[in-house]
Length: 120
Image (cartoon, rainbow, N blue to C red):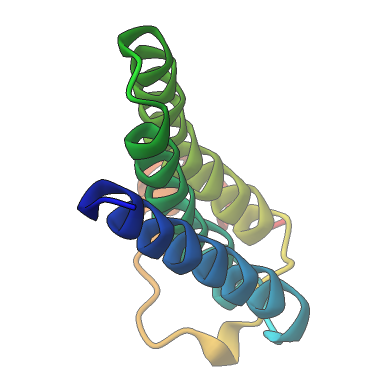
């Protein structure tokens, strides 16, 4: 067993732990924004750690290229999807206003469409 195997095992274990924490957060957190945070940040980092661990074990350039493609797609799609879900939920009225410390979206929506209040 060499050092790359130990680092690979550590990355896999850390990535699986972060993904488990993200799953628990999705179930346990009370509101939409907390769940979005749990579904994106630790889950993406967990997946990247798993991909690094797998890449260290495989050591084939074809496989590493595929793992890099998966990592890039995850980094590009997870933040955009979370942003779109949060914005749609806000506009749909699914967000509790008392949980927001700062609400910059209402003024931005009113500036885009002065005839509407921004919320339905």
